[in-house]
Length: 287
Image (cartoon, rainbow, N blue to C red; front, side, top):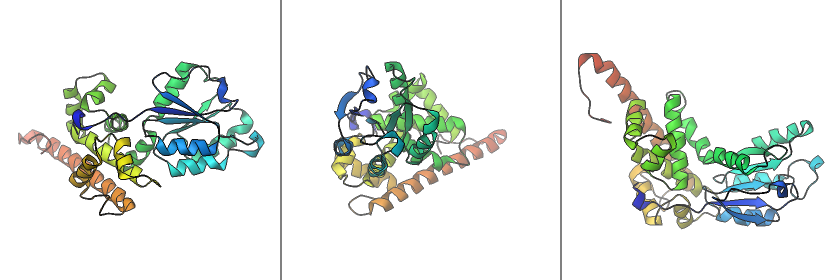
């Protein structure tokens, strides 16, 4: 997908207004900060949030620490798994079990309020969780045959897809020329950058479509498509399916299968090219 067909999804930082989080003096200015006071407000805010946004939540909101993390947080993560959630708490030895629980609930990270209160520390934490829910869905598809270099490119593509970027933004992550990323993709058996970004954006949209209460228009906006028609067209082109004609869980499963099959086929072609190098046989790019 070219940049003219993509939109930048809104980036909001949703923060629970609790005494623990008031210890954060300044939040990163690149986010539009929205303060919420309870689980109901947080749920409503997350329902409108895009995957480019993030949540910093006090996991004990409305509870004493001795009671453990609030189960409402797990329910919200299950409802909107595409939105990264950071649990913010002062880490102590006696809370190690709570941290394990939060990680089981798939929080994207835990912010230690004892030491990570500076704007730089919070920014680094948020940078680290960018697109983490999508990465969790995509990375297992590469297990067993992709190199760490290939995984790095795919992880970066997930970040660019979530942010509504294009091939130049992908190259900017690595601080190289876009042609260098194209060469990496060819060497590692990945689709060319534009197609790889089209795939990661489709997988993001398919993941969002599984979430309760998401409309196609809402998903298109959150995944960086200019219109819902652009999203449907991308689904038909890559997945051979459409949210109007397939169940959403089936659509996601088909997207995962087709992406995995394409990457695996490209990887096989890389191996074939390497075998034939000594014979002088030529291959067209990505052919």
